[in-house]
Amino acid sequence: DVKVTQSSRYLVKRTGEKVFLECVQDMDHENMFWYRQDPGLGLRLIYFSYDVKMKEKGDIPEGYSVSREKKERFSLILESASTNQTSMYLCASSFNWVAGENLAKNIQYFGAGTRLSVL
Amino acid sequence: TQLLEQSPQFLSIQEGENLTVYCNSSSVFSSLQWYRQEPGEGPVLLVTVVTGGEVKKLKRLTFQFGDARKDSSLHITAAQPGDTGLYLCAGVADMRFGAGTRLTVKP
Image (cartoon, rainbow over all chains, first blue to last red; front, top):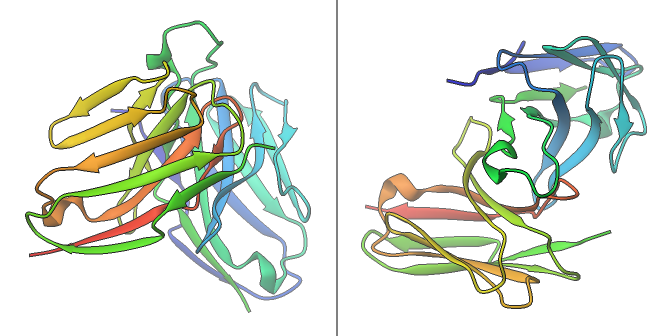
């Protein structure tokens, strides 16, 4: 079974703190993603990475950074947490699917999420 | 930017009833996925649809992709409490998700 593990289920941090959210996958996937999920807004892509040390901005990268030093690990960093970053954060991974290839490869596997509260 | 609208936002029904939820886009999907997210868990892929007019069945769930590939529907027959969850559609090409339909099936 594919496993995507997020380091914490719940986190409570104070405004201004530096926050690290860690994600590890065990399927040798090339792609890894960070989303935040808010009621009524669905999942919004923060950053993704298609290879070690590579990163691409998603729709809402402001206030976040990422690190991918090893293939299996993708970290989301909140440099200075703010209350509007209170949310559910979801990590996902997938194979590097190319249009026209077997669609069975294009599946995102998600972790269980980290619910972050910034006070 | 492809916007995905899902309706209804919330749906609460009794066990045994049928239901349909919808996903609509402002532009054409290259392909579309449906995920289900149960409370306290991440989303899990249910199906991928690629061809306009395509129909896929997964037990009591029937997925349809519109002929013009701008909309999709999920129909559940004889809903069960185990179907409770958040149903999300997503455009495969740009990794964008709709806000979801939160379904509650009461025993």
